[in-house]
Length: 161
Image 1: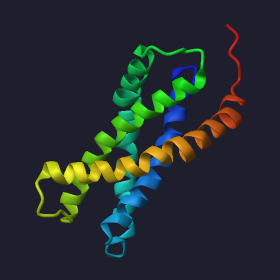
Image 2: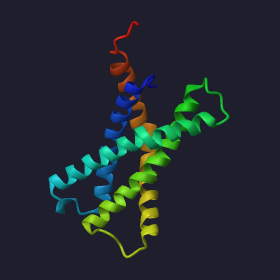
Image 3: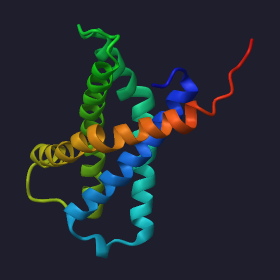
Image 4: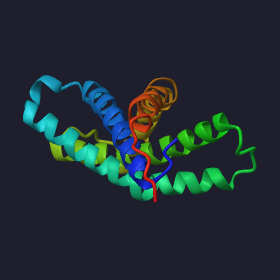
């Protein structure tokens, strides 16, 4: 998909925005006290979550997922395999880290259970993975790739040098 660093940043930004918007909404609905939270708090958490997700995507999870995907023994000329494996590893990594963020926000808001931190984290991870996996593969991934190829890559001005 992205062919250079600029395109990777644009693609990652669009993907992170979409995933964070949906997953933040989902997590707030799961907590159940949305009406008790001020709009400024919700927007602040979404903004911080977006920044963290983008940094993870660009500098940790994205490069690691690409490295693991390229190391797998499959026909790299079949784009669908690359997209599926890359998406899978991105989802695993992003849910891993963003569930930590969600747990931290729960502690800050005081909305934690009497469970251990590890069992609370695993509970959050599983709930997030169950939603993030199909969301990314079926909705957000295809939508962002469509937006990216139709409006971003299409409008790129070729550089002659």
